[in-house]
Each structure stands twice: as structure tokens, then as C-alpha cells.
Image (tube, rainbow, N blue to C red; front, side, top):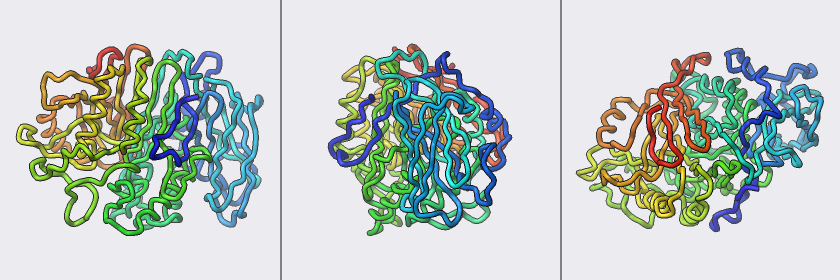
Length: 532
């Protein structure tokens, strides 16, 4: 069982005890039939199982999903849809060892209730480690689509390889989801999603495919926005094809929120965060124990992939200090400021993770495994927008706004000689590959870790000209492209991590091709990225 112990300041928050899935094994090959058809562009509408009984109203229109896989258990998700749902509906589920459901491994039922948006979080147990499974739901005379998942290895079991898709930032009104269609057709072990699953904003006039409704504030509004996103067929395909591991960022609640402070310093922000967290849990494959308690929900976790890797899942929103030097017209949230105009950036007491989560992470680095993968929300490498020799210019919402906290984290990695540290992030709508140092000002400072920050699935990036100009001031950043939408394909073994930066050719086309824009490699014995 993976270590999911809570930081002390989050001890009251719920958590999933399940670790991560392992690589595919020869005993239980996973069929690609159906999934490749989806990935090849055949998906044009929400998919329902072939043999569903006829009915006037689709009851599984948001698809199926799985997540939080453990060696002996998994979380299966769906949500009933359509008008005139009873307050309580019994939903049966099946988990099978084969796609035809002739060899049933587990079955059961859950009550989908109106108070939880008729969502279902089934948690079959007693499963075999490191094995592929198929699952489906049935209710009100209909069957859902069939989903595919797998269990994790035992924490002490050898795992030769690991593969996953790193993704984030899927703003619905900015582009189509060709990247998800591509992910659904790949032989990954899981999807690692690091935030901005939905966007809380209203769409501007002329949006490619507009958000329904305006800016989100209430539980019903958040629920409706999730339903709109989950109606996308390519996103449904990616959920049904692979188990997911997830952390959130800000737009699941509100842009640039920090702890219990909203961007506009609204007095009722705790209620808004509670509504947003509740809708998040209702629409994600988290266990029932993770159900939020008011404005608190536990997403922090640590998962071991056999003896190969340890993956740390962080939360950089719920426990952080507010951003310093905000824009005067907002009152809160981020800004881009010169260091000499905002010396508070160097305040060592400020934290992005919260003091207890910092300690929890420091105590959990694993010197025995080849890889320590840090899944968090944003870019960790320093990115100055002007010459650091004159102080530099920094964005206050990311790690540059909390530089002493970053130095503490990387200093611990250096002091304890933690092997194979690779930081995985998103948020900034650009592909970045960087070397991480405890002292970015010292040209000869040793490289401590490697960073892979993936671009957005759909959300627009800033002008590439700005990134190109900034790279001159940041020699530790090997690659920076804000004009690419897509994801990062990561494949690793005991010696090397191979990262392919994937880019969508035409983000406004749901059937666009997806190509490899660049390849990098990381040696488990030597931190830093090399072109491959």
C-alpha cells in the first residue's frame, strides 16, 4: 500500500490510499480494439455501449472513468444524466478480466443520489496486482460505455518500465481536444493531469465553442460546466482508455486564488471554494473518502510504482500564502513585477505548499528508487523576463513568486542526494524543459533536478516572441514554446526517462494530427535534460 499519510495541517482532510498502476505485463495484454478507432477520429458524439437497451434519454452521457489505482483496488466513476432522475438510483457495476465480460472479477452496486449530482464512485477490492481490467455500469435500463483500467504493482515488486501522458489546461472555448483523441490511442499506463480541468470564466464573443453560462460561483454552475466539458467525445475516450492521476490548479475554482483568498478578495470565497471542490469530487474518479468537507479536500499523495519510481502529488493552491504585490485593480492574485519594486518576493517565511506540506515532502523523498517524480501544478524553474543581473522581472503566481520556498525544496534534494528527481508541471500553456538548481544566479552551480512542464491541451499561450526573448536570460531553460498545444509523452526505465513533447497541428480541428515537436532524455544517474 502506498504512503498516503497527510501533512499535519491537512490531517482532517480525506485521501485515497491507492498507489499508481504498473507497466503492462505479458500475462494480460490489453486489447486496442475500439480505443484505436476512437483515437483515429471515429469519435463524433458521446459513445454508448453497443448493447444498451433502447431508451429515450441517455443516462450515461458523460462517459466513464477510473483513477487512483492500487495493487488490489481501483476507483470507477460515472454520473447519471437526463431529466426526471429519481432522488436515489441503484447503479450496478461490473469489473471483468476480459473485454467481452465473460470472466467477471468483481461486481456490486452503488446508490447515485441527487445530493451528489447522481455521481458514482465504485471501489472494487480484492483485485490482482498489475493486471488489466474492463468495467461498465448499468442503471435505468441502460448500460454505459466500457472502460479499461488496470491495477498497480505491489510497492516492493520490480517494475521494468513506466509510461504516462502529462497533461493540463483544457479550456473548452479555446480549442478542440485532438490531443485527447491522440492520448486515447497510445499504450500509456496512465494519464497524469496537473490542473485546470475546467475554466470558471464566461466565454468572450466569437469563441470557438462557447462556455454555457457565465462566470461560475455556485455548485449548480460548477456542475453544469463539468458536464459540458465531459460531454466532449475525445475527453471521454481518454478517460475510458486509461486510469488517471489528478491534481488541481486554480481554474477549477477561480483564477489565481490562494488558500481562502479569491482574486477579487470577495467575502464569500470560502463558500465558492466549497462549491467548486464539491463539484470537482463529484466529477472525478476519487474515492468516497475524498468527498470534501466544506472548503477542504485532500489531493496530496505519494505513490510507489513498484521499486522503479516514487510519485509525489502536490497541492500548491489550498495551503499557499497569497501572492505579493498584486495588481491594484484586482486586490489579489498575480502580477508580473521587477524584484527591486517588490522585495517581498524574497520573504523566506512565505510558502507555496504550506509549511506542513513542505515538511511532508522533505520526509518522503525516496533514496532507494531510481526515480522521484514530483507532480505539481506549474513551472518550477526560474523564468526572468528581464536581465537577472539587474534584479529580474518575475510572475508572482508561480514558483518565482515563492523563490525561498523553491530554494528550500531543491536544497533538500541536493543535501540528501535524492536520485532521479523530475518535476512535472503545467499551468503556463507552454512546453518547457529545464535544469533545476538551488542557485540560478551561479553559472557553475550544480544541476539538482530536471523539469518537464507540459503545454496546454487547448488553452491559448502567450506570444512566442516573449518566450524567445526570455530564453536569453534563462540559460538553464533548454526549450520553451508557447505556440504549441498538446501534452508530454513520458516513458522511463531504470536508466533513462524519454520525453516526447507532443504538438497539435491545428488546435481548432478536432481531427488534427498530433506530432512530436521535440525529444529530450534524462539519465537517472545524472540530473539535467539532453536532446534526444
